[in-house]
Image 1: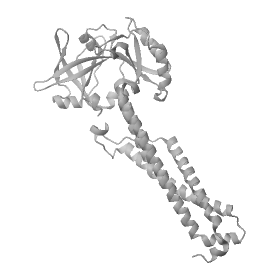
Image 2: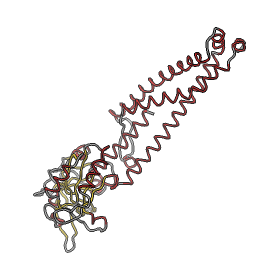
Image 3: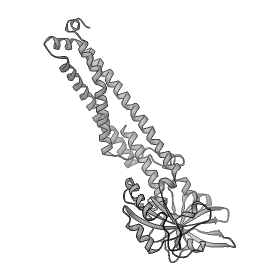
Image 4: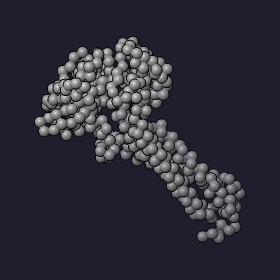
Length: 376
């Protein structure tokens, strides 16, 4: 049970953090983008940014701009999405998943035309760190060409992002879109505590939603749970599997302890008869057997905790169990040891096992001293 809970917690939080690494916990954008395929912008001026920073629970905010383009080598080409970010961009997530090279120095005032691509894109186009590549951007009237230098290659194993997303300067993205400096596709917000995201999101609904920016654009905010419902619906299904596994394991433990208690009572039938003949009450004898069962359960739980926590720590520090990243989005089985949850699991298991033993313990009341002396 400890391993099951630790693996599911680790898997859910790892996938959640990867999704948040690409888009923050809350995104603020133009309301019109949900009614049209054209790229709509918002004005991320100092006043709007200051309002968002002042909202409770907000940890970090950063701008981003999208522009679609085509990467072309001498032998192949690939359509990708360029995500332009500014100097305030938090690159911690990309640094954790960086395979080679370095993170570009992102800017909102100039562009060095540096590009961070995924390993999936690098493999398709046969690119390496330091290579140069031409990018083509098709507009309404012309085609713009830019020459980029690959400064780094990352890999998150999130196929929906890795197969098409590159990172560059927000200045270059805005210039290619023909936008002004303060314009951007949206703003990503990171909260202090993801468990309290609803509280922070309510503040965004009150202060940001339906408000207008400097150019009169209507703003709307959404959480990552609303932006990527398929991912989080899939993760929620894992909770059902966990509950089924835990219930089955507790049932197995309960039936095992019932069988064990009945065997112990049958083996001690003559002793029970002797105790009754000496004046012992049924309640006293029944409690004696229950305490002995609790002692057996306690021993099993101690060894179970040692083995379960030990295996979780072994996987956490060595990653000995590997997975197919194309299927599970992670290359190693993620685990997360939550001690309060382990303690709660122990307490519930102990209580359930003791409760299911109360009824079988009444078998003691049906043992008669005279008959028990002749029992074999």
